[in-house]
Length: 391
Image (tube, rainbow, N blue to C red; front, side, top):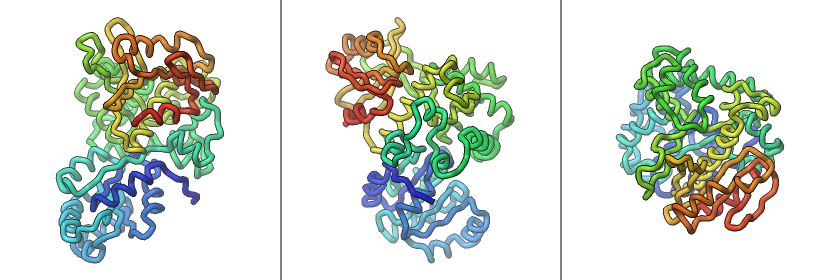
């Protein structure tokens, strides 16, 4: 199978030098196994999804680690979490950096157990689906923006002969029927799937959990639990509001987004550019696509920047605020391919009322990049122009 370079490689190389254990998480089928087997070619690989492998290790854990003291990859470790205590003893005695790689698809299950057993010994890294930048660097970006949004970013779509519709139908079925139940006992899979679909219709909106729970027919506490499951599985993420030094005038509830725009479109039954172009949520879908690219960039490059949205009680709003610690970068996101001056209203408001030193950006679906006074118009294809500003 052809291997495509991942941005995460440089970060993993750094972590190898400073930590005995590297814990890799990410959504199912985001390319974790392919990356690990390529990057750590000389390591022995054990996949605990394989019942035979899991059974043999479980039957004699001490014997397993006696034979495999270093340079091992243990995939889907949430299937046998008791291994973590043995890994702690192993790495303390061997004291070799980068000697054990563990990975899994359920962040909630892994993170708590790893932090308890391997505190100070493990470094954490998430591998997400392909980013736009990775597609460009590997010569895979061949679609227009709306085709790309519908097609999605999961690596399997670029290595198999499968339609995105077929792929995401199977992905959702597998996730709902199997992975979600591994994390928590869900009383009704049909209601859980319904919540997932209803979340797709609320993408880019401030999340009202009580209203969502009513629509699904569950309690608000259950809805919150289920959304947390979706977050732990890297299906959705919440974007928090920015309210540093702003006071009480701002909205303080989070927005909801999907990590992958292809999955989002599939849940909304969008399978063509015509359907997307006329969809009521096209603006929010394009916004989701752009916001997720900034999430991927910050994750892949290990930048310390944080991202937010801004909205105050007077209706002034900015889709994305990147806080680098030293400065803020306000970004508006527009699905239109034709520039209009009012696109910059939000970032101008930000500069006049919050941070007069910031440079504003508008990301849009057009092709041109252009400086407009103190702001910059940026094509969806040229997000690197903003990435460079994230120190």
